[in-house]
Image 1 (cartoon, rainbow, N blue to C red):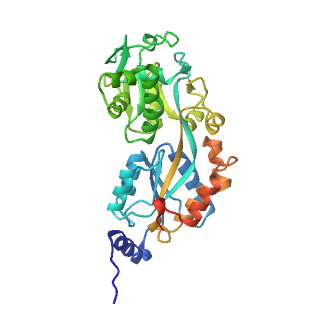
Image 2 (cartoon, rainbow, N blue to C red):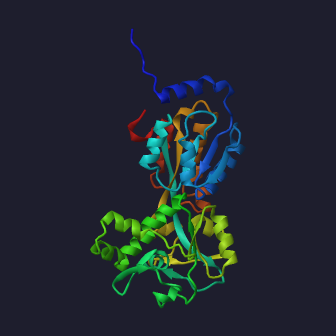
Image 3 (cartoon, helix red, strand yellow):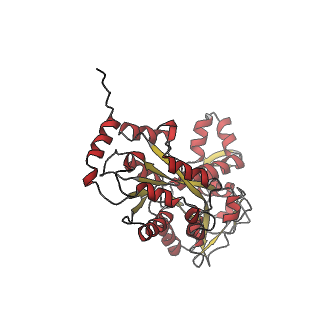
Length: 346
């Protein structure tokens, strides 16, 4: 007689499947505020066109959504986590520990993060990563030495920028947008100014220097926003000198209130993001709990609908809202159709 070893994941899925008759009938989603409007558009259309209830879509940030996603398997846990960054290895490990071992990664397209200000505010029209680092970095290079950031106005380090007080509203650490901001703006700016090289020359390891480069000042010039882009917009509305970080789609839907700056000499647009010309862009994802497919009604159908050509393609409603269509969308469609999970699982 042979015995099958029941893992935590197996037990969780077995228990969940056994209660399928009383499982909830509505797909539940949480996560990235950047992906939120796209997911909401798809959820509404799904409810109108399919014989399933409209999915519930909540925000909270990529990290928060993935944390909820990794709480376990069962109808008391969410089915999908939206993310404006790829899931991290430590999150995959946390999922596995809680029994969530089969995860389907779905890339829906691309977005860019933009630097925008009041439409009638100061002439913030052109930035380089070095400008953002010099404005917001905790420590910067001044006269060949690494010092606590002394800059009070943009013109203090770049005479082409306005002599206006520095104040920036940046994504909080739970948002996937923060990671893109750190890696593609602060870190790039730190390198461009020579600050990273100076830190290493002063005795820091490369890893410690990278951490120092993405550390932002804590004197009120840089303000973390833990809410969504509407909160950032409200801060900009209340502060004529403020610069905010937004997703391209949010900016494009608020051009009556905001003006956008170039980054590295390139204006953000769906075209410059799709070609890779605009330097601050990133892929957008959602993650599906495979154990919930076939148990939560409409889950696979929703995921398939989300990445269908007529929805996520270049002529679909998500592109009209600002999503840059993925040129490899057909491969993503196959991933969903085949329920192909990450890390070679089955």
